[in-house]
Length: 397
Image (cartoon, rainbow, N blue to C red; front, side, top):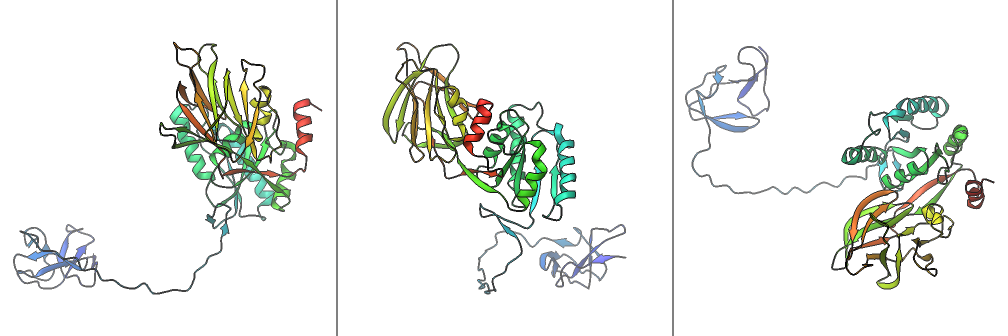
């Protein structure tokens, strides 16, 4: 009958079939008191003489553990031999990670476009399959109609997927909102992002759908440039004046807005720990150059070219004619403190980061806004200047 001896030092084997399958049998005669060896180590001792081939179980074996045992740990320190430097063929990414494949991944944020991404991947493989390690789409049933923590869980799973080092780039199908979400999800990856405009304005998206094939041709021939866009990092400030460490990132803007009724709120603005101004307004926008063409522009703020190393602070409906936007260096630390407009009632506000409501604030609460080292890397193909795009998108020319 089939049996297996696990270690060469063993004096027992394990049966693999029959009534004793999984049980031990003696490989040789074992005298009473002699150790039973399995896995190369004693697992107990014989309580009676055992003949070769006998079944070994609780009726004829007893543990060696009894009473108090003295134990002394004496590790053997063996020097690890030096080996020659080993290498493998791979791709070193901008964030330091290394991939073993150079693939293009299409990851849709909602399950209802699974078929679209499948068709894209199939057609792209026909055209470009020999220029990379393949184009793949990753389908899932989530995204649509998800809310709260459920939606956040899906976002985290997809975020982990697109940050994999085997992906050489990210293809984003959607409008500016989708691009912004992709930038936040990829904030630490340094992966380049190519936006395909499926929305309306499309300031961030580089390619119109009808030009997708030509755009992929240019990318795979390395005929593109990377435009780095600064981001914002927001975190609450503790009573001691330090950051809480829990951060939210934004590509467009951080907005502190009034909550509830139509009352004004008071916002104190500190730059590098010095009081810069006090605003009584409906709210305050801190915008990057990328976001300057959005809410900031609607609130009367200036437009900044994308590579400007600065941020702009713009009040929303300020209750003063001389309260205007303030442009500050990207090196500056900005702290906002919610004041108190009326003596008998605390101000209440809501913090919105790139269109996502983050938390509520009340009088005395403070938040810090910095420009982090992480930047969004946007693929540029067309050579169309920012000024022409601004004319076309904003003026309809």
